[in-house]
Image (cartoon, rainbow, N blue to C red):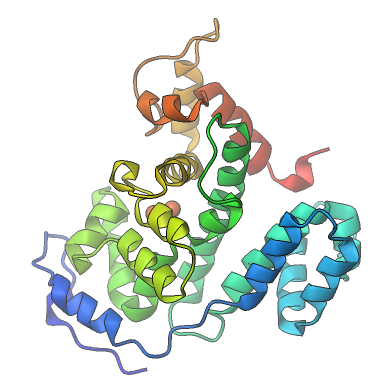
Length: 307
Ligand SMILES: [Fe+2]
Ligand SMILES: [Fe+2]
């Protein structure tokens, strides 16, 4: 598609006077954004219905050959430890369980709608990998938390939390590649650079897209506030869980080491921030840094390493 030329988006590592109006004018005139796949809602509903059988899930997925192929690719990539490739949805359900296949099927559907679309496939792949990790972490942290999130399935929320980045990258691929380049050279956070370059934040673009897709307002609010849950009006718990899952997904070795040190041998925890996670992020949710480290270890090592 023709790209709007936006002179304010010429990238330079120095702060830019990017023009918020121009960026939004571009985003608002997009006519060819993918529509949200109805199958995601269908699959999600199956999980909420206690009478759903593995055959029901398999039938919904297999109706769409593209989705089936993508799901099996995801399954086999995530479970490369298996001795053989899983070639059928029902076998995948038997081997991995209903919930896991349900989650990966929703991920496959959400990722699949951007196939053959503009944008850099390598960058997009990396964004999806991050999104799936955040989805898994959000669901696990939600199960441990003492307060309930405002939406029933945190996996979908995690999967969609950075969808605004996908839109920005799609519309401004060169500038987006520069954002990453600047991040490497300056060490500044991608979010700060994003704001300097585009004068918008990915979470507001994400909330805008979810609203356009007519997804529930709670999901829109939680995704829109995932970097600043105090700004959430309807879904502060969801926003706080997403912030935590996102921080945990960005943990590197140093952050993990720091978090381990912050969790004392006596089970007490330091009052200092650790790995970018402030103690006050945890307390309202009723989870501890120790819980998070255990969740991260379980999930990052991958479901294939579970046994
Ligand atoms: Fe984000
Ligand atoms: Fe993120």
